[in-house]
Image 1 (cartoon, each protein chain N blue to C red):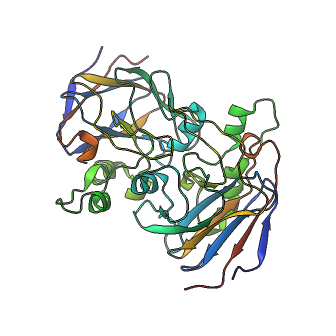
Image 2 (image 1 turned 180 degrees about the vertical axis):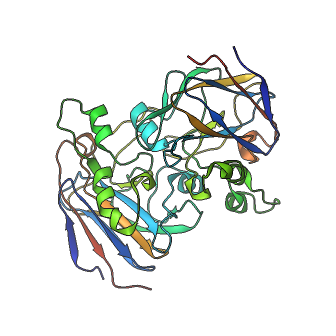
Length: 199
Length: 199
């Protein structure tokens, strides 16, 4: 049974404790919105989600139901247990004010998911330099035959979701992404639910 | 002018200081051998090479001459100034004893590039958890249309090289990769040269 629905307002982020066995469901309530997800071992935050370990063990960049997300210590942090979209990114680091200067020189820069995560994770003793590549839920980054990356609008529709099971006690960072290209040019909230049905 | 040639014996690694403006040439002396490369800001080793920032700014996973390798603080650490191969990997984390257990359960496990880098970087105050995705010179990891990753033998021939210019004072970690699949099943040395022609 899913718990209470929490809302992350547009272009913001949050962090919370997720106990081992709990289910975290990340929901795109309006469709076409990315949510950057980070995970740290709640007991020792130097252990952190690792794209490099995860892609190596999974032997694919297309992660979906059944795949594990590994830490930098090769431990399983999260398992994807349900996924109504099947299109996520695990190549790119959360956008920052520097990213905005690079990609959107004519727009007012935003601190981006990076800045939102820095603020949300600080109370847990997690420093800015410890923010790695995030698991970017619903982010649509196809890799072309030549290796070229494109950032396209998400294919997620209103109500689409991805559900993770925590395989250890975790600190989770989660955002409603702030970058125009990643979200089809509009900024929407992200919802999440934490199940109290811990195994 | 290239400096003295240094040899990294098979299945080992090293670390060294590389001043801003210096050229580092990584050479595959026998062909078909991977070298994992890491870079840290010599003044503050919390600043480290970032695959996520680099791939985002480059808009490709196929990095070669002219591309910059960025840090987690969006600063350029290295520029690729020459590349006789054009096939490298920036998706995967250095293999560790856990990786060996996963991929080669029937072989005697090896501490891998991860273990070699841990030892080589320790004198610089760099901890194991601070080892991220490496720039894996000559590593051949094509991404298929479905997202599937393959680890194929390098296409590098004897004497092939890639040359980087340091854009800040750096601590470099560099290995001769230890994983069977990454190196066509044989383990060979890696050579490197540091130019004294600092701009």
